[in-house]
Length: 332
Image (cartoon, rainbow, N blue to C red):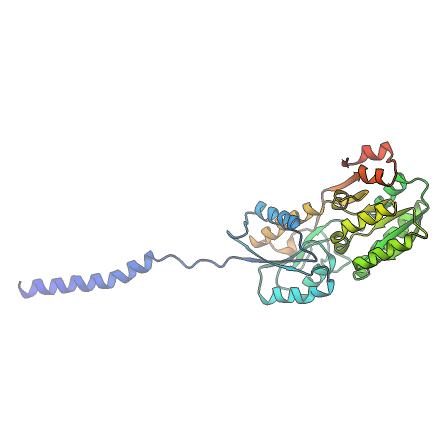
C-alpha cells in the first residue's frame, strides 16, 4: 500500500470518529418535561369528590399519572391546619393550588401566595371574601366556583315552611370554628325566617360530642325544625346528624344531597360533586396557560331538592304532594 492510500484511510477513520458522537447524541431521547403538580387542599378526604375533580381535569385533557400529578393535603376537619398545609404546597412549588370545598382553605391559599394560581370552590360571595376583585374579571391569581350555600338559605327555610306550615321556631346549627360562615348563615337565616314568621334559635357544635349535646337539649324543648348550616365538618358527621334527628323526631333540612342519601329528611342546594368537577376543569385550563385573572368565577349549575320519604315515615311526617312534585329526587 503506497503512502497516499494510507493517508486516505487515516483521514476517513478520523472523519468517522468525529461524526459518530454527533449521530449518537442525535439518537439519544430528549429530556422529558417535568410533569405539572396540582396541590389539592381540602378539609376532609372524600374519594368521590376527588374523583369528580379528576373528571374535570380529564375534560381539560389531563389524566393523573399520565400528564399531571396531585399532592393531596387534608386538614382532617381542623380549619386551623390550612395555613401550614398550604405553606407546604407553596414550598413544593406546585403549578396550581385548588381549594374546592371550603372558604377557610381558599382564604389560606390566597393569603399564602400571589404568584401560584389558586382555584377555589366557596359557598360565600368571593368578592366580599376578598378572593377576587369582581366575578367577571377576578383580576388576581385566584378564580373558581361559587356554589351559593348562603344564598339559598331563604329558599331552604321556605321549603321547611312548606313542609311544616304550623312551625314557629327553627333551630339553626352552625360550626363556630368557621366564624365567617357562621355570620353569613345566621344573617341570611334570620332575615329569611323573619319574612315568613319563623323564630330562629342559634345552636352550635364543632365536635361529635357537641352534636350529641345539642340534640340532648332538644329533649326538653324541641324546635319545630332543624336547619343544619353548610359545613364540611357537618358533612363528615352527616350520618350522626341524620340519626339524631330521627331519634328525636325533628324534621331537618340540609344543604346538599349527601345528607338525604344517608337518611336525612330533606336537602336543598348545589350539587357539590359537580362543583368539584367544575374546579377540575378550571385547574386544567390554567395548566394549559389560561390566567386566573381572565377566568370569570363560575356559578354552580346544579341546584337540587332531594326528599327522603323513609326518613319522613320514621318521624311520622307526611310530605305535601306539591313538595314531592317539586323534588328533583325522592328517595323511597
